Image 1 (spheres, one colour):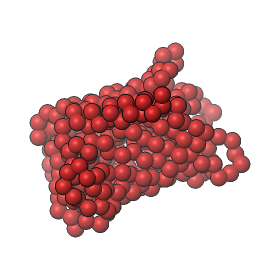
Image 2: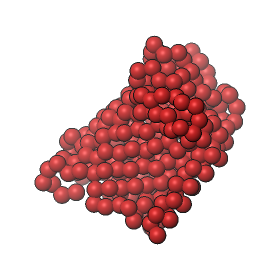
Image 3: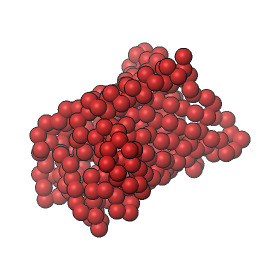
Image 4: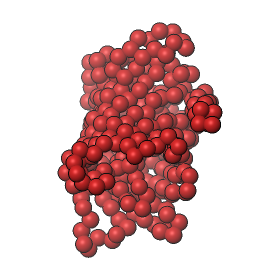
Amino acid sequence: MHCRFLHRLIGMCLAAGLLAPAVRAQDRVTELSSLGEMLDRIPNLTPFDMPSFLPKGMFHIYSSPHFGDLIHNDYLRVPLGIRAKTSPDVESYVEVEGYFTHGLRDAAGYGLDRLRTGIKYEPLPATDWPKETAWSTGLDFISPLSRPPTELSDGHQHTVPYLAKSQLVAPDLKLLGFGSIGADFLAHTALPANFGRNELHSNALNLTAGLVRDWKNFRGTLTASFGTTALLSDEHHQVFGLRPAVGFPLTRWQGKRTRLMVALGAYTVWGPDGHELGVSTSLRVDFIYKTSGEKR
């Protein structure tokens, strides 16, 4: 029974990858490009069991393979990250993405193509704070590694500071609202510049807002994002995106230290290169560990 369901799940992921257009911009965007990254950035609220802040002394290892690569590219990318809470209100992470030939198309070799690391500060709620409100601020850094295939990188380093807030807007409906404001500062590397469609080519200011709701067997999100280069560079380009997504926890395979979630979503983007529309899919696996005697 479990094997049959797993085969269906893999088929759904591959089908979504087949339907998704080969748009590199949506594969490399740094501003909340996936459901897992979004949930990691926004502040945690206990009723929603968000996978952001873990108790002190805990860390988890996670991965989210890119299934769309099996259809559109010569390689499969597999990021592997470690996220740990180093103090009651500070969390840090480091993630390395590797790629290798999957054998379905031409040989593309193997190696490491990207490094993501960052730190997040989420202050403990003060006594005068509303119980349904939380804040966080952080800094992410993204850089290409080695000399990966050109299509895997835009050839720049990204430094992304942000400030985020979450608010329980409808407790009876378990509806959570969130928003963030951040900047994306670009720095050239030795790699050639290779921006995809509707990727901003210079420093940009990014605004994001959305809603999250928990149902019994899945979690739904709707995220709207806006990026502009007008305030931080000599360019005057804007990109607007809308991304609905649904996350399904695979409870049958989850244990005390393992979490699995499949996310199916869509996106529509308007930018200087025109309008884009497509779908996306991802599988996120988390292995959670406790290194102290504190309770989870």
